[in-house]
Length: 223
Image (cartoon, rainbow, N blue to C red; front, side, top):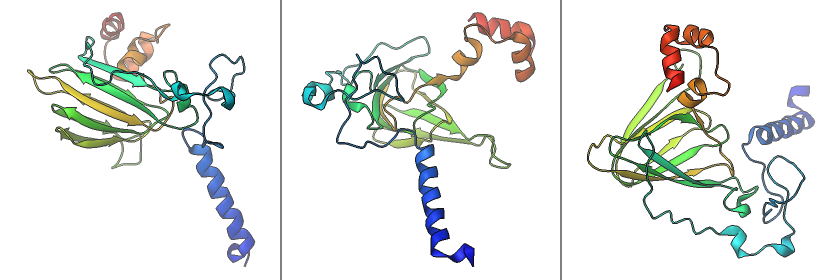
C-alpha cells in the first residue's frame, strides 16, 4: 500500500528531481543573468555575480573574429574557445562556443570535455569524427561510433566521452563550429594527460597499462 500512496509517489518524484539537478553539468540560473565578477576575491563553483546595476552590453559581447582562419598547431588544428573567461555574461548560462580549424590531414586529437556535451557543425570541408563509449557491460563496452561529415552536417559528442575530429583531405583545410553545454566545458587531451603530465606518471605504471616496453613509454613522454 505504501508503494502506491500519493505521498510516496510525491517523495519519489522529488528525489528524481533532486537527482537530476545533482548530475546537471552547470547549475540553472535563478535570475535573468549573473555576469561573472572576475575581480571578486570570493571563490564559488563558477563566479559570483557582478552588481546588476553595473552590467552593460559589453558583458555579453566579444569581437572574436570567428569568421577568420587560424594558424594550426603541430597536430594540424586550432581550437578558439569562447567561454565564460572571454564573455563574463556566460556565467550560469551553461553554454559556450568554439571555432575549430583543421589543416589538410589535421586533427583535433582524442580528448574529452568533462563538463559538457558537444554539438559540432561543419562549415567547410570534410571531417571524419567519432567517439567511444565508457566501460559499459558487454557488448556495449568501449563501442566506437564514427561518421564522415560534409559541409552543413551536424554530429553530437556525449558529455565526458573520448572523441576526435580528423580532416581526411590532403589538400584542403576544414572548419567547424561547436557549441558546448557548459560555461566552462574543460578539455582533457588524452595523449597530453597520460604522457605529458607534470610530474610524469611512472613509466612502470604506463608500461603495464599499455602492455608495452618501458623505453616506448619513455619515448612517448619525451615527445
